[in-house]
Length: 277
View 1 (spheres, rainbow, N blue to C red):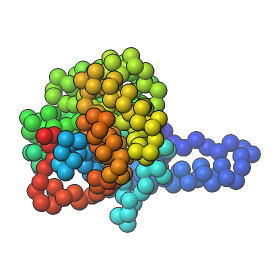
View 2 (cartoon, rainbow, N blue to C red):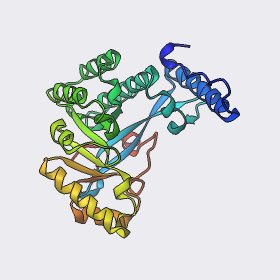
View 3 (cartoon, rainbow, N blue to C red):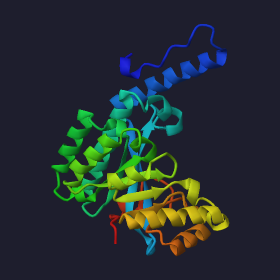
View 4 (cartoon, rainbow, N blue to C red):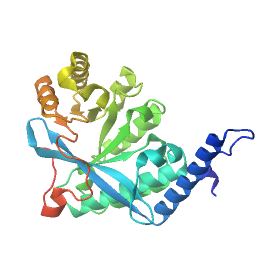
């Protein structure tokens, strides 16, 4: 087993439950490693719609899916906490980026976001995959959005800022994912120059019936728009919540109300594309 992928051994005298959890984690690491080596991965896609035209996609978010040897999807919750700090997490980011860049090359009108961990910054295979993919089509950079979770940005803000400054010059956009979930300070939000902020589900679910969440969402929108940032509400699941968000002035929305993540999006089947209006 490679050192970077090693699961910590169970301490002597630990409980049977701890031993079982450790054994399960080792099995998960082995399963994910095999999937990565054999490229048993696919992208699922979820639409982000414009609040000004909710029937039209603004862009699509791509979500990496890992498959087992039978072709079934392994739920991310089962493996991501185990591998996200290891090299397997970095390799998974590379596969997500490579697959996303291939789709952008295949669909010239597509605008697509790809998730990455801030831990991947400085990982040379990821940077090489990016440069190789961008070389295929000069328009890819301006159609690529890199999403970084809020919980990652405040741990290494200097590295995130350096990456953003470099890739912004190439035309690539950045989205701050799950804003409100972590501890990002206002200084970091100001200094990092995210193009897009995605409000966490903490503030957007059941919004129509929650005045406190409405107040928090209104404040986030005011702050973000003052920084000239495009704001997306995540996890929108009802028409009532969507209407409230439109009234509050949100720019875009994403959630099951508009469509669940799918391996076969309509635009792929019918030759359609997603672009910001």
